[in-house]
Length: 115
Image (tube, rainbow, N blue to C red; front, side, top):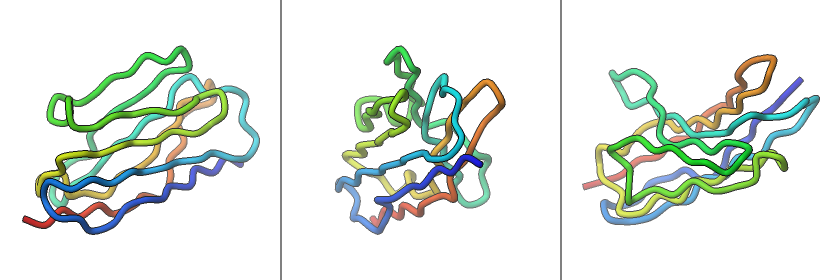
């Protein structure tokens, strides 16, 4: 059983910052990548940022220059530093990990940005 536990969500004013954390535990072979997705009300889930086991990163266009993903995929931890937050960043943020057996998801953490 693999578990991803997220923390760090909350309420922040526009222009503020938050840092999300995710740690995995359980019977894990090897993660290929870890990342963050989000789902805003009435919208589909979208990729925010991802990092591979080799350290390569990928960002959604809407967050480039504002968000930074970091962590150690081998150590099963990933972080998302979110700066210059906008109201449109309001969503439930989910940690994701990809392994040869498939994808794993955290329970989600709410991020609310007030204008």
